[in-house]
Length: 449
Ligand SMILES: *Cc1c(COP(=O)(O)O)cnc(C)c1O
Image 1 (cartoon, helix red, strand yellow):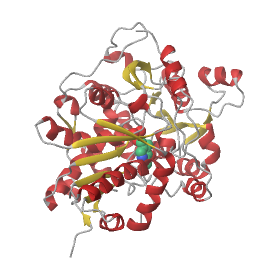
Image 2 (cartoon, rainbow, N blue to C red; image 1 turned 90 degrees about the horizontal axis):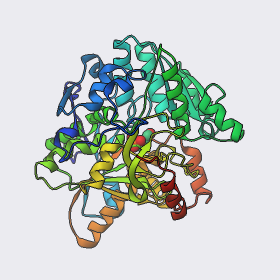
Image 3 (cartoon, rainbow, N blue to C red; image 1 turned 90 degrees about the vertical axis):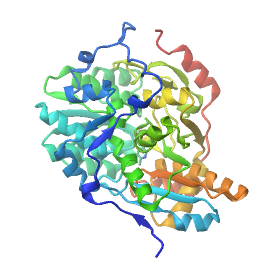
């Protein structure tokens, strides 16, 4: 029988995370404080536990995964690697297509891979309360779940437009025992300031981050947690790529190209970084981050120091950015609407070691539907970006007759995104390229360092 799923045993859950910093040709650009000088780790102790700060600045190649975290990972890990035989047949491509499926986690995406260790380290250091933000609701769900598992109270600032449009993500967050507020709120200075200027403001991820950071910084009992972008978040997500390598080994194959949707970079880094280790050692493998044309951070943004949030409360990170005051267009891939990107992913793109492509909304939904009809699983709109890029590569193989091995991460299922599919079927979605004038104008508003 031809294998469909390539499975590992629970005892194969990785024992260590992989830190890409150890194999990068240049050290990461340091985060800067408001004075333009590199910040020390102690600048972060008000909002993060020490263990995570250590991971944030670590250059060690391997970092041990605590046993308790591995036990919880066992609820959904190791995740399956599938051979996409249905999709291959539908496309008539000679390429071999594989995908790893992270939708098997309780929250339905890859995000619990990091919310669980983040909650664990906070509990270890006596923290009983966490504030965080969520865009489309995926991260809020993952953090609520992890908070519940470790006895930590979680407050989620949810971007108002999603709060209104995604009531079931909100219900999930509440089911896992967390509190969820529509951001901007009147509970923080950052929120009140924006509401005074624009009472109807529907929020943005950058603004929700400002509210959550402000709350954590002003309360001794509360820490902050971020679902992507930071080095320790990408580190935790490397369980995806590490398992995938073992799974490819099992079937005696290896990817020529790896595709992953990229918002803040944790999904991409999680699946691609363990393969970067091989690339750094001389192996040929393309690593491709896929983003929406409507939020083209890596492909058209400025590579510069910028804030991670709207109010300018976070340290400055050197990254690709559309400007910290970016107001995202209302596209249906809420998890990919962040103005910046991981500093590690940005640096590797800047140095030409990682590729980035942008794909339009309609082609993305078309790819998601093709996938659902040939493989069964209904993908999250975010994940469909990777599917679009993979299908394009598979069709290129069809033209050239090459039997390449293509691999993408199916970062989540789309069961709570069916309203977006409805809009697509009703012809209500449009392609939208972010205007060049906006990108040029953002340059002038970047902090001067
Ligand atoms: C959040 C999310 C992404 C994007 O992840 P980043 O780490 O921010 O790049 C992709 N897919 C799904 C399903 C998500 O929930």
